[in-house]
Length: 80
Image (cartoon, rainbow, N blue to C red; front, side, top):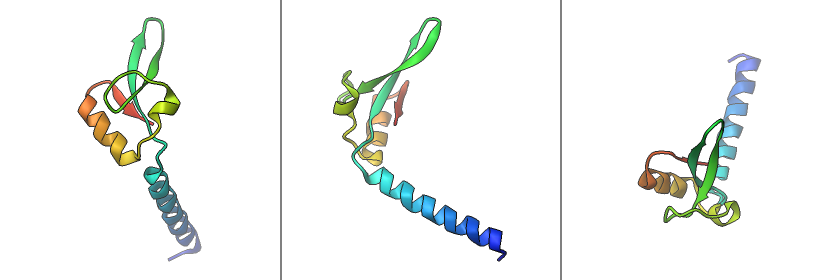
């Protein structure tokens, strides 16, 4: 393996470890994307029950939990 290939492999391994750690942190939230005429869509934070809430109150999920809630809440839902 060439030196550049080794460097890329090491960087990729580091990013995977970082991403795995970030996904396990309880700082993910679910949001509903609301269209606004003539403006950018707005992201409205959602509780795990699907009600509107503040960003700090919503950011209590792991990535996997947020994915589960987003799938349950359906269309127009994202995670961040």
